[in-house]
Image 1 (tube, rainbow, N blue to C red):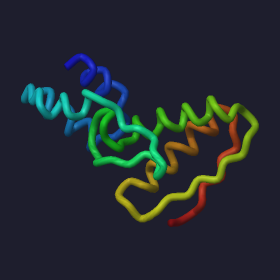
Image 2: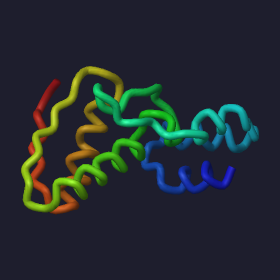
Image 3: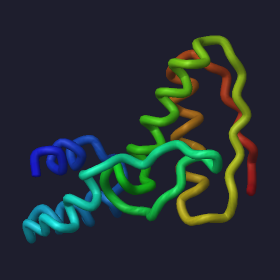
Image 4: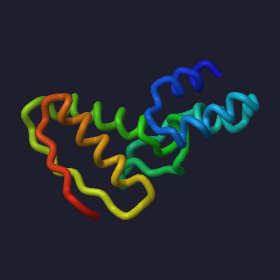
Length: 114
């Protein structure tokens, strides 16, 4: 429950914040365990998973954390091109990624459309 509260405090997305707040309010331990019991892993197709709150879902926090990890590996001054597709929130995830990379000193070029 503490991990869920900490996540809630840092989540910039009103949809996933509302989802998580409702789970905490209901004390839905099974749903919270499913979302917080493990983390999405970066596989051959990148990050893939169900949209929702928590580290075992695709959401803005998960994407921003992955972008921060990429920035750390690449280091400042590198140039990254970011594209996205028509899936739900893909454009938001792309903008968040660009913001994190730029904030870490990389040059991010965001493609204008899917």
